[in-house]
Length: 286
Image 1 (cartoon, one colour):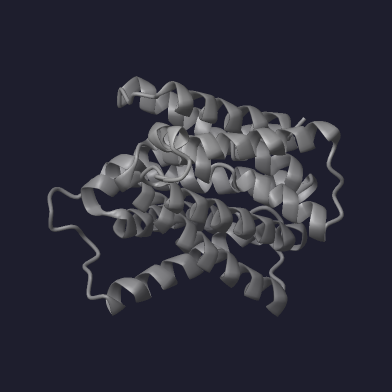
Image 2: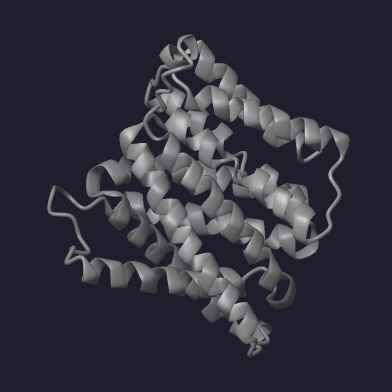
């Protein structure tokens, strides 16, 4: 079930990220994040209202503090990622952000005493190589004295760290509270943080640039929350180091969709980089 949950998370997140690229370019990354979280929260609240009697609510301050930290890191990761999508190509930024699964695995080894297999160590090397190929432009590879990072790479790395640390932390209260409540609770905090940011910066909750993409944002919210539910369901019973790499392979879904619908061009160097990241994410889960 952990592998199945990871695959469902991969499909859901991959679709959500692909759609978010369109919304982010229309209304900006902050509003995209706010409304996708809001619509995703509506779905979660409806489910909670229907199944309320099946939950046993416990007062655990430690878990609440962890979920607040998860919310803060999620906001940082998403904003960085969407900023990267505005600057660079989906097929470049997405694979870098997708390596958050590597961060979860490393944290699991360090703090949860999860043992890595030789094949998983090999996968880490492949992922690292893939990131380097994606990060450096062809010109900079010819002249290593002048490193010219491709657009969106820095934001992709920030997203990778934010997602990786936060999803590792999310697995901790999930073991105590089950697969549903942690996702529901931390989304409340995310909405609060983003609302405070929008009010503090004087920004509006709707875009003045054009028509508000309501249907698109609803779809993003549904796919995004479905990804989190699948991930949490998986790590409730399995090691996070098993479910996370599979879920983080959402880049494969995003890339396929971007190649089909956006007609993005990929150089041979980036193709090897993407292949390395995706292959490593798959191998690390074996």
